[in-house]
Each structure stands twice: as C-alpha cells, then as structure tokens.
Length: 462
Ligand code: NAD
Ligand code: UGA
Image (cartoon, rainbow, N blue to C red):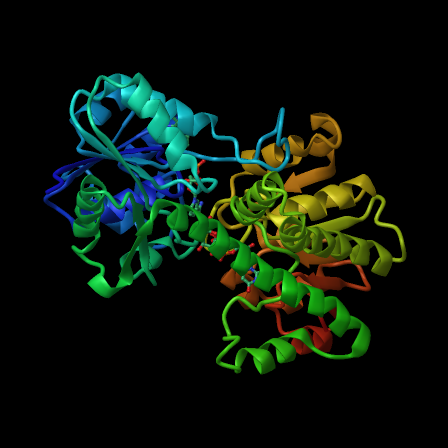
C-alpha cells in the first residue's frame, strides 16, 4: 500500500489535486514540491487568501490537510527519495523555439523531472504522468529512467487530470471518471492497482477506468479537443445567427435537448481561453502531421482557427460600432480571467481583444475581481506587440467596477463573473458617455433591461 506520495509541480493541477488526495487519504503523506520558492511560500501562507491558486473550496481543503499529511516544499530530492509514488505535474507549454515551434509540446520540464528522479531514486518507484503529454511520452520517460537510474525498478503510469479551473475541487471530489493507463505486464498491473487503491478512498470503483498507457495519454488530448470543438462549433453558429436573426442561445437550447448532443459546453462566447485547449490541440495537430495524417491535422486545426476568428471579430465589431474609431476612447473591460472563479489568465480572450484595441489607440480600463494588476501587465507585454511603456500608457487597472466604467464610451464583458450581473447598471449608465455601448462577450447580462435603461447592447450570436 502506498504511504508516501510526492508531486513535482505545485501549480493549478498539482496543488489542488494533491490537496484533495491528502484530505481524502489521511494515511498517505503527500509532499508537493516546486522549484519556485515564492509559489511554495504562498502555499504555506497562514493567510489562506494568499494561496497561489484561487479555487472555490480549496482553502478549506488545504486548511484541513496542510501540516497533517500535506506538505509544500522546495526540497525536491528529499521528497522524491522518500516517496513510493511520484506524480509529475509540471507545465508542458507549446514550444517557442526550434522544431515544432508554436505547435509541439515543450517537454523539457518533463525530461528534467525524469532525470532528477533517476538520479535520486534508491528504491523502486511508480512514476505517474499527471501533466498532459503527447502520446508515447511514457516511452521517453522510461528510457531516461532506465538508462540513467541507479538500477532500481520504475513503473510509468499515465493518469491525466480532467479538472476544470473554477470547479477544480468539486471535479476532484466527484470526477466523471479517473483514467489510469499502465503496462500490461504483472508489474505494470500491480502499479495500476496501487494507484486505483489511492483513488478508491473516495471515488466509486466503476468510475476508475484502466487502459493501456497510450490510450490514456491520447484520451486526454482527445477529451480537450472534443470540448474545444464544441465551443468553436457553437461560436461558428453565433456568427451565422447574427446575420440571420437567429439567437444562438435559442439554437443551443434547441440542439442541446437532443440527448445525443447534450446541453453542456454550448455557451457561445468571445472565444475559449485557458492554458490547455489551444496547447493540447496544437500538440495533437503536430503529432498527426508527424505521422503524415494531414487531413486529421487540418480537421482539428480548424477549431483553433475558428477560435482566433471569434476573438478577433469581437474586437473588430467594437471598433466598427464605435463609428470606426476607438482612438483616444475609453473602453471598460469587465473581466480578464479566461473564465469565472479563477485567477488564471493564460490565453484569456481578453488579452487578444485588448491587444487589438490598443493597436487602434483605445484606452482600456480593466477590472477583474481576482486577477492581480502585475498579471495583466505581464499578459500584454508577453505578446510583444508594442513596448512595455506603450502598453502601460494604454491601460489602467482598476479596483472598483463603477470607476472602471466612468466616462467610458463602451463596456466589454470578457469574463462571466456572477457579480457583473448584480451591478447597479443605472448608475453605470448615468456615468458613461453617450451613446453608452455594452458588448457582452459572455451573454450574461439582461440585454432587454439594459436597453430599457438606455444602453446600446450587443451580445454574441444575436
Ligand atoms: P502550472 O504552470 O500552474 O504549474 C506547473 C509547476 O511546475 C510550476 O509551479 C513550475 O514552477 C513547476 N515546475 C516546472 N518544472 C519543474 C521542475 N523540474 N521541478 C519542480 N517544479 C517544476 O501548470 P498547471 O496548470 O498546473 O499544468 C500542469 C500540467 O497539467 C500541464 O501539462 C497541463 O496541461 C495539465 N493540466 C492542466 C489543467 C489546468 O486546469 N490548469 C487541467 C488538466 C491538466
Ligand atoms: C478544460 C477542460 O474542461 C478540463 O476537463 C481539462 O482538464 C482542462 O481544460 C485542462 O486540460 O486544462 P478549463 O480550461 O479549466 O478546463 O475550463 P473550461 O471550463 O473547459 O473552459 C475553457 C474555456 O472555454 C473558457 O475560456 C470558457 O469560458 C470557454 N467555454 C467553455 C465557452 O466559451 N463556452 C462553453 O460552453 C464552455
């Protein structure tokens, strides 16, 4: 039975996932390690509002388990050495250099982990891929471990994570399924069982699915591709709705009631964001191309092309509606995170919409309930479209939504935070320049009510 787990990578996946394992399995010591001292300090902060990841319910899970059987540390070697099972949960971003630049997954952090495990391990270990990886990565990890290790035995499992940010804790408490891929040898089966036993502490057995390693690795990429494809599909229809007088919400409801299609993941929006959909699809496209499967690659690439189009046309529509110029005009952004209930901004549509509007010399005032100002500056500067000074001059980051919208020509809703619906919209209207425009990139506001106040309201796909 497993009694000690180590997880390398204390990010959005490693932190919450391990916190839940520790809470549900008090008999297992769980140590989460990271190279980033600041992040580890934040995980150890007594003030739970300072945890590096904002997730509803995470604070109480950490409060219960931290110091009991959940530990956060930068002592990576020590944690590897004492654990029987090691999760690798480091980032696997899109490559920004060399072969596969802009498409393939950058596996350098994964390889560093494998080499470190090989160097440190003096006893047999089960190594679990928790990060999302290209299919067949387990082979590369095994080669490194077997060729550079100290002669101990390694079993590699694939155990991809399906949590969504903003609902990570509920997803981890009651997952639709847990997927575990392993070798079909007796040793492989024993390792799979050891991980099944960990999850079985709170997940019903019929939701724990075991497969071969390659099916498990590929299922993760496939799941994200299918989810993103639904968003791009409904977003494609949103543009057709706008031209034809149909309403995308009504279309989504009508098709979603077909039990073969289902109602979830059909919300039209300014475009999907997040650290994974784009990265994982590009990775899959790259893999397909590398096998010469060009039709497969082109089919999935279209999901990304559609999403880029949706972000871009949202910005274009703002410019066109504001009489073809936003130069010197104040545009208020409500929301910067890629979805509600998270402080994560990676690949958020807001970044790209802001970038397009800044290129048209708009001034952008931004309010997000959870995102730090430094993050917003970082996101804009990362695109490298203009100098840091120009970016800083073009945006102001606010702490009060009413101040954000004051004297604005237009408001753009970029994230579906619930609190936006409860604002005093009359007060906001009174303090704006007229005509006062609202571009609702999430279809969360009541357009009819806003029009009664006097706003010029535009949703997506209506
Ligand atoms: P993240 O960037 O939030 O966290 C990764 C952490 O790993 C960072 O804190 C980094 O400092 C650390 N790290 C990198 N190399 C290290 C090393 N050699 N030793 C120790 N620490 C190291 O990333 P994330 O969002 O948690 O994603 C991690 C993986 O999980 C990715 O492969 C991602 O595709 C996958 N995933 C993410 C989500 C999500 O919702 N964010 C969901 C499912 C799967
Ligand atoms: C997604 C998947 O849902 C998770 O299962 C997966 O584990 C994770 O990616 C991952 O691998 O990282 P996440 O990106 O956290 O989770 O959040 P989602 O709820 O999937 O939303 C992604 C983006 O799509 C957001 O920008 C969201 O606003 C957008 N979206 C989602 C829509 O525009 N419409 C929808 O109907 C649903």
